[in-house]
Image 1 (spheres, rainbow, N blue to C red):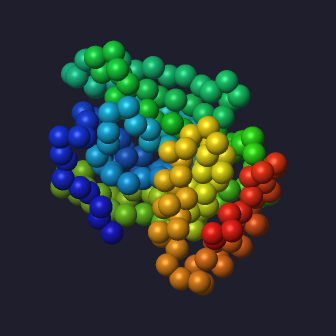
Image 2 (cartoon, rainbow, N blue to C red):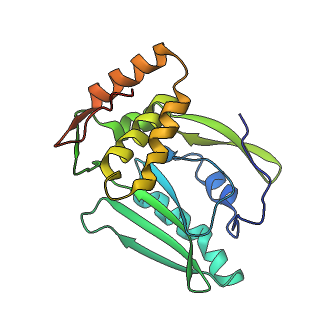
Length: 206
């Protein structure tokens, strides 16, 4: 499946994502919540699970060095306070253009405990679509459909009280589950992987 889209006035696209992920095709990774690839909006994130986070960060920096010299970018590398993420941020004209958000194991949530290793399983169960770089197709790795839905649903439950815009993830889940069989598979996956704390729980709508 090829999902390249024609760039329009709303995309930034100052960075060529195909250049980065062409170079990363031999890494074990998945891009989470991908929708516009290789297009992106200014200030957006590329969320990534990988079993070699620091190697992937170095690769992104190596390719990014060209943008420092030729495009007048600034690159900032930082980590989350609880050592859950490595951020590689590309700034243009003092504003954040794109963040590569590389997750570190184990996945940590406040409202949810994972009963299984969703991080490694998402990488192992990954699928892909083909994109094109230098007139050659290459694979871009993404989670399986059910892993994708589970990750979006977890993000919705984790953040919906503080970020009401996260309802988009629940809407996405409901839209993509197309049959009773898929609903059962999804609910089994939620129960197998997660234990909710407090008021976070399965919504009756599912």
